[in-house]
Structure formats: structure tokens, C-alpha cells
Image (cartoon, rainbow, N blue to C red; front, side, top):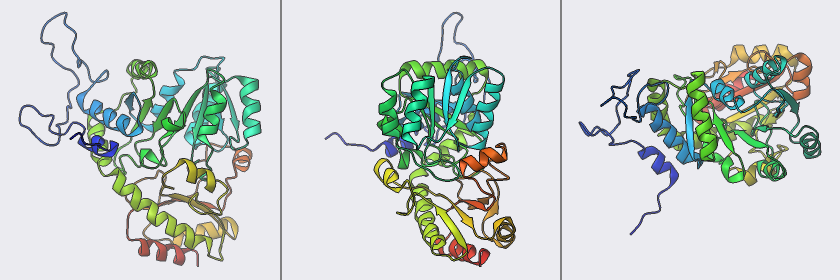
Amino acid sequence: MKLNISKNTIAIRTALESDEQYRAVIPPIYLTSTFAYKEIGVEQRYDYTRSANPTRDALAEAVSVLEGGFGATVTSSGMAATTLVTSLLNPNDYVIVPHDCYGGTFRLFSQLAERGLLQVKFIDQSDINLFQQTIKQYQPKIVWVESPSNPLLRVVDIQDISKILKQSNTLLVVDNTFLTPIFQTPFKLGADIVIHSTTKYINGHSDVVGGIVVAKSETLHQTMQEWANTLGLSGSPFDSYMTLRGLRTLKLRMKAHEKTAHALARVLSEHPSVEKVYYPGLSSHPSHAIAKKQQSGFGGMLSFEIKGGLREVKKFFKRIEYFSLAESLGGVESLVCHPYTMTHAPLSSEDKKKAGISENLIRISVGIEEQEDLIKSIQVAIS
């Protein structure tokens, strides 16, 4: 009888027992920079680690299986993954990016545009009429989507965007870092490329920086592979090994993150000192219906605005326990950050205002500590 095996099981089993010498269950790390040729003039799969490495390939295969893509390219960071995608753009090509995108993404596209290497428009992609007008006017090469967005957790209808783009040659790129393929599979919604900062949930332990670009087609995948090699953006074997180790517990961790995040969001939404809570799992969130339709879970990220302005925000950060004041997200430990001065510092005051990022906004990356401990800590910090 043929078993119907889930993608999660296949991803976990990727490369296990591949050691032909000693039959190690977990595959070894190939830390070598170069590989010996068997004979002159005969090509082989591995010759130099910047080009290809067995450990990195194992991670690429596992993530590609989970996302349902043709193949994946592992990079040295999330921003390296973003940079790799820009290799598809020529100086006159437009890319449409969310106005509330991650600060590093905003900085990269803005600076490349200033140098004349590409053209960029930052828009509110949730405004479907504005989106359609922008597509018609600029005929972009790429539409870049972050859903949910960082840090306001806005969700856009990826399938609707895909349908609009089918009328053109525009590529749809989705940053799936916040949800991972456990809670969202953008290829099923029409994406051409899916990227991750694997630093976050896929690795999940805040001890590795990395990224990945998953392509839907063989042509796109080969292009990404070639440019990663040419630009030297490939991830290291050791980081790939660590990330693959984290990936094996991804589903368990994502469920734990989401369960506590949902509980925290409910507590915060009922607190008198909280002005607004941003979490798509709440029915009060403007994007709740879309999120419920295209996601199988709501993730472990949430943001909220505290009453009293920056003065109360500073008090909150002084009082909070069991949450580290730090950038990044997706680790087993809980983090809090101030997007206005931290993750989105590259944006001007005007751009922050347009994106809805206020001084009293606090972002939380919910870890997997005991739920009650985290709830009590938040309640004390904002009392």
C-alpha cells in the first residue's frame, strides 16, 4: 500500500541516513571549501562550496518541499535573499513594494532606486483600486508582497493580486517569513517566488542568520542559483546545518507560538491601557477575513499601541520581564521591540506616518515559554 506522506514528514526526513560511510542518522556537515575531482575534464556535482554544497542542498530541498516549489537557493541572510531577487531587475524595471514593508527591504529598494539600478513604488497594497491603477500605469517586473506585514500585521489577498498580475508578465514575490509554509503556502495562491529570512522561524533559535529563495519554476530557480553563485550570496554549510536542525521542529514551534500569541492578543485587546491591538487572529482586525481564507494559522507575531505616548512606552520597556528588548523575531524566546526606533528606523518620519507606525507602537515576537508567565509579565508592564 502506498502511503500518503505529508510534506512536513518529507521535509523532516530529508537527507536523514544519507551518510553512506557510517550510516549516521543525521547527515554530516560538509565544512570543506572545495572538493577533489576524480579525474580531469569530468564535471561533478560538487566542486566549490560557493557554487554547491551537500549540507546547503539538504536545507534547500527541505524548504522547497514544504513550500511546494521547484527548488530553493539558500543565502547568507534574509537581506541577501531579497538582494538575490533584485538581480531579476534592470534599471528601467519597476518593482511595487508595500508602503509598510520591513525597514531593511525599504532601505534596499530605495537605495538601489536612488542609484538608478531599478525603479520602485511603495503603495498600500490593501487598496485594490490603487493597486490596479499602479499596475496599469507602471507595468512592473515584480510585485513584492509581505503578508502579514511587519509590524502592523496587515494581510493582503495574495490570490486576488495574482489574478490581476496574470494579465501581465509581472512576477509575484511573497515574503513568507512571518507565517512559514506551516501556516501559508503562497505558491498555491499564485506566487512565482517565495522568500524567507530563515534567521526567524525556520531556524527558530536566534543563533543563525540566513535566508532562502524558493522558485516555482525551473527557469527561475536556475537564474537564482546562477546569481547567488556570481554575487557570492550563498549560505554557509554550518549555518545550513543549524537551520535544518531548527526546521525539523518548525511545525511544533509554530503551533506553540500561535497559541500563546492568540491568548496575549485577547488579553491586550481587553486592557484599558491599550489603544489598539494588531493581530489577524482577532475578529476585530481589518484583515481577519482575508487571513482566515488564505492562512491555516495566524502566527506568533502581534503589535499593539499603548496609551500615553512615548513616555508610557519607555515605562513598559523598563517594567517588562521574560521578554528581551531586541530586534528580530521567530525564536523560542519572547522578544519586544519598538519599531519606530528599531526595525523601521530607516523610514523617514513621514514614511512612518504613512505606514501607520507610531511612537507608541510595540511589537511582540511571542516565544514558547509558559503562556501564563508571559501574560502576567505583560499585565504587570502595562499596569
